Amino acid sequence: MQINETYCRQQVINAIARVMEMDDVAGLYDGTRLEADVGFDSGLYIELLMYLEESFPGLGLDPALLNGDDFVTVASIARFLARQLAAHGLSEGV
Amino acid sequence: MKTSHNLLLLIDYLRRSAQCLPDKIALLEDQRELGYAALWEATTGLAGELASRGVCRGDRVLLLLPNAIDYAVAFWAVQYLGAIAVPISPDTRAAKLAWMLDDCTPRVVLASVAVRAEVAKAVAMARHRSDFLWQGDGASLSGPWPPCPCLPAPGGDALDQDLAAIIYTSGSTGFPKGVMLSQHNMVAASQSVSRYLGLAEADRILCAIPLTFDYGLHQLTMSALVGASLIIEASFAQPLFTLARLVQFQATVFPIVPTMLALLAPIANRFDFSCVRKVTSTAAALHPDAIDQIRSQFRHAELFSMYGLTECHRCTYLPPPELDRRKGSVGIAIPNTELWLVDPAGRSHTRSAEGELVIRGSTVMRGYWNNPEQTALSLRPGPLPGERVLYTGDWCQLDADGFLYFLARLDEVLKVKGEKVAPKEVEAVLQQHPDIVLAAVIGVEHPLDGQRPQAYVQLREGADSSEADWRSWCRDRLQPFMLPARIFALPALPRTSNGKVDKVALKASHDAARRPAPPRSLSM
Image (tube, rainbow over all chains, first blue to last red; front, side, top):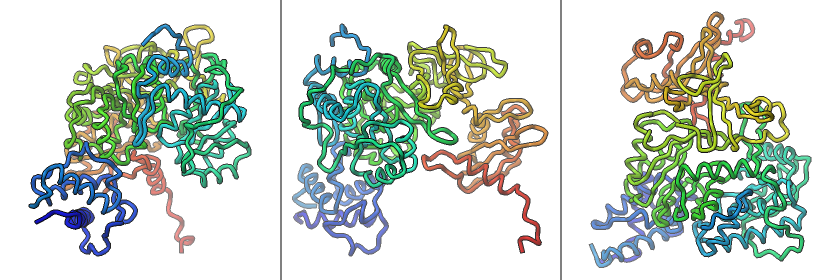
């Protein structure tokens, strides 16, 4: 399966839903802001990273490469994720 | 770096580094960096703007700014003019801010546009009128500014006796106290601390501590003194991203406060902190568990456990090799200062004693701004004619080798049957009980004993011990007069906004419970 941005976005949404223990993800879309809209706080990002790593076997996210600007909206995280997958040579499928 | 220059004023630090290390990075923030020469240029630019608004030597300038490069430029511009920086947290509420405006009567206020509404409320309440210069929303304090024909020489002819800063500390009661720090005070403090920390030009200091605290502010002075680079973080509210930058920028020095440790714990093991050479912490004392945590997370770092008051910046530090031998000690006097304890009979001691901590040295403040009564309580005659030493109001202990242990603020010490009891000592014993996770001890009035210690404890989940068990635990470990009269378990101890146990609330609930119930006829 080709991992495209749509797929990344879905994984990001799933991970956010797991962190926030949301049953319904209908309210989560590209422009959803983690802190302002979903109520993320600083302690939750590490959990989000762990769930993202779980979604892509072989993916290890180096926290030292993180930048707050990548973790603002669903779309910005999806772009970050796509870049990391490419860097890990995981873009071609799972 | 050349050491031939006289470093009499803080601005001399920056001038020397700008001359000797023009291209070296002085300051870094999220999206921006500034070399020493560029920082000097921004500083003189803003100093010119302030001068054209009438600021000169001795004038107060309020810094109501977030942690950012602009804060540093503002602080240095004020120093350039020989004026007095008054750093105030941008979170300060209107009523308190209005009081401060009237107390220190600043010529100019440098404020973030983010707090404009609160500032407007304060201005409406205050009598004093200041000129405002806003930062943010595209307006940078770093300039460029139009050249100023009236710019004085660096330092504005200030003497080292003149004030460099006024830092407000919240008094336990009433209004804040403005700690007056002279150029000489701040030069002495920054040189003493950077010496025992061994700071050097190659260091990169990551500061997530508010620059409005003296602990944060001195990261700025010390980095300019040694020509190091200072990485300024807005706060520690986003620990994951702050730690990411710590690694990206390969920071070598990481100043912390103990409340940051809880935020570090769950994420630290994902990072490689081998770049960090020194972790500094300032507080009453580091808990042994905290020492273990920091050491396991920062394996290549020396840990400096330190303790101080704004009134003298820093009292003591524990040399890292002593950490294991003297757990709980806050160490020895910092270089170029000395300390002793004064016992209740008025005798001075330098070892094996308990008493109020006194500090002597060039770091001791000039007094509290507009507050001669409080100044007279804190600053009292020293050994030389005309000299004044700092009575800290801290009740401490010295061991046989002269290492210091903080016990309590003097206004927290209980007087039980004529003996002094530090609540912290009793709390420490209670917290060693396997079922107790947190303990707080307050004093309750007693007709015969004067006061009696009363304890409140928070238990671990599944605990099945009772008050009788905790009392017998204490009896085995404390002198009889120190034993709590009662020990109550609460589901959770009340906390203040900064996370400390709220003893005022505990005392209030105790007093309310003891108030006689209204007579039945009235309550119906």
